[in-house]
Length: 71
Figure 1: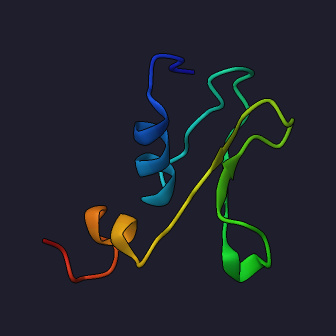
Figure 2: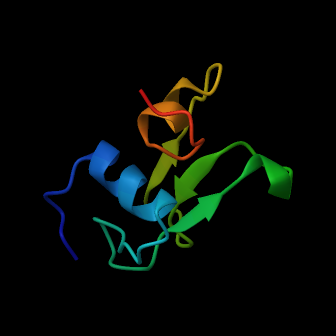
């Protein structure tokens, strides 16, 4: 468990499919998507950590290189 990671680092790693542990309890974080009918977020199954993802016009996905458009 690396509690020194920033929220952005955690988000980037989870979106890329890496196993990331909760900075508070050590459980593996889950990536919750709109396709699941839930607001996009990175969550701890124990409820210790939640990072809501605000996506506007795909800009976040573009910056992460996940849309193929990239800048």
